Amino acid sequence: MDSISIIITNFNYANFLPKAIESALSQGDGVEVIVVDDGSTDQSRDVLTDLEKKHDNLCVILQDNTGPAAARNRGAKKAAGEWLCFLDADDVLIEGVFKGVFKALPDDFQIDVIVGEYNPSTKTSTKLLYPIKEGFKQFIRKKLAMAQGAYLIKKALFDQIQFPEHIKGREDVVFFARVLACGHCVKSSKQFCELYKHTDSFRHRMQEHNQNLLIVPEIFNHESLPQPYHRYENEFKSRLCLSFFRDHFKQGDFKTARSWYYRAIKTDWRRLFQWAYLSKFIRSFFLTAGRIKA
Image 1: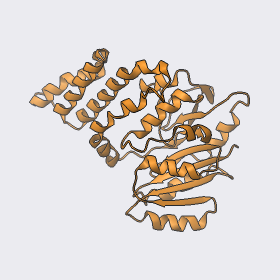
Image 2 (image 1 turned 180 degrees about the vertical axis):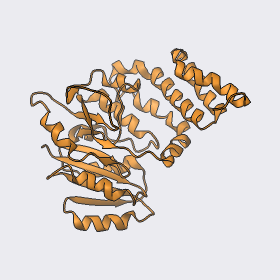
Image 3 (image 1 turned 90 degrees about the horizontal axis):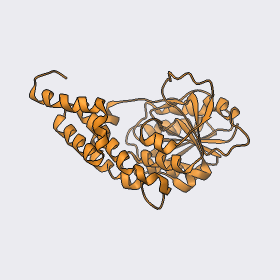
Image 4 (image 1 turned 45 degrees about the vertical axis):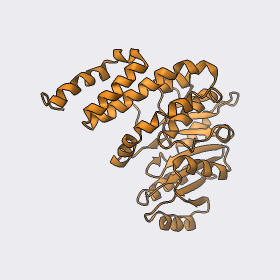
């Protein structure tokens, strides 16, 4: 199996850390595990001290709180593996998943990124690996999903792109878009990890919505993104606004939700034809008036 460095970023997840680290170590001999603690204030550092004593291939980096992007970049800088996997401390990798993936890699094709599943898949693909066609376009149209822990990236490509540290919130979206635009990617039908969803994640995402529109010019930067992809900018921005609309609708903040819907259709009028969102927009008026129940 090719050499892998698994980088786990942690902030106040002391209760989850042991499982995340154990899942990383389960990937087999020769796997390097690096944990970057991003200024935790709980018992994380005590947990890491104990675990580092027990495992020779576990490296712990402590830093002040600077955000997940900086933590991932710092871990990658330390990494010695040919491939990198980034895992959040509250998620876990499927035991031994990467062994089968690497066995299926063709020898005669340049591959920079392997995208896996991150939740149990209902797909019945007969191929373990298959090329991603128009990955950037599929990603912005939400036909291709990526998540931390559910992909492998060549360190050589990562060193050229890295996570944007000046963005706070959805910095991974910028990273994924750039990777899919610049790298040779394949899709795996295997589930790489299990994600833990909790209320704190959703709350932080809601608070960051206004700032998260800043990712649009970051993705469609004329210097870093190949020219053919620039035409998708308004489509991506409108779809992003619709996702903010959906989040606020779920929270019962219908006035704010409608403001995001207006912004979406103003940016790209074709969003009007997405009935799933239009129907919620219409319902929001009745819900605000108390005429129907959510």
